[in-house]
Structure formats: structure tokens, C-alpha cells
Length: 111
Image 1: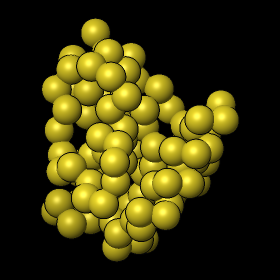
Image 2: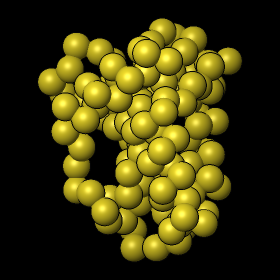
Image 3: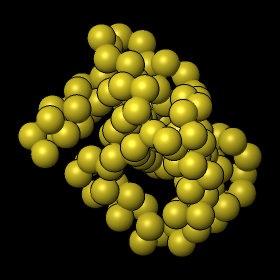
Image 4: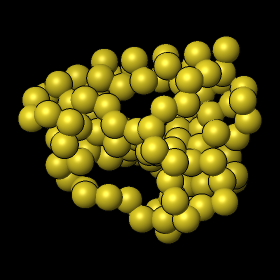
């Protein structure tokens, strides 16, 4: 079983999104369970030395297909530990920059 930890930037963004999207917890829970089982999904994020992935999750509150869902950015620290770095709604933000990911990693190291 893989330990899935949550960073402060992830918590802040999640809380903000949860005010608008009531189903967010239910939408991302299956993905978290998949990560806990050790299956690392998504696309490897280019331009970083760390093992960072970006994966899609559906948004039941705005059913407009995959393009309208959430994006979760996570880092594989080890085969037994995953760190959820960021989450955003694709309808709010088209992409996330390497700088944003770097900032989330730095803030997570302080925790």
C-alpha cells in the first residue's frame, strides 16, 4: 500500500475548488485509491528532475468531457510514497508551469 500525502498548496486549491464544485471529493477519490494501490497513472511532466506526473480526473459538476475535468499533479517520492502537489480545474487554468510545480515541491519540503 502506497502512502499518499497532501501538500499545503494542494489543500488550498482543493478547498477553493470545493466551494464551487461539490462533487470534487467523490471525483478524485478513485484516482487516489489507484495511487494507493501503486499504479502511477498520467503523463510524466517534462522539464523536471523529479518523478512528477499530471493526471486527469472527471468533474461531475460540469460534465463537458475530459477537457473540463480536474488535473492533479503528483510526485512519486518512492515506490511507497506519493505526494499530491497541485490540483486545478481545466476550465479555470489551461496548464500549470514548471515554476508553480517547483514552488509546490519547495513548500512541501518545508512541511
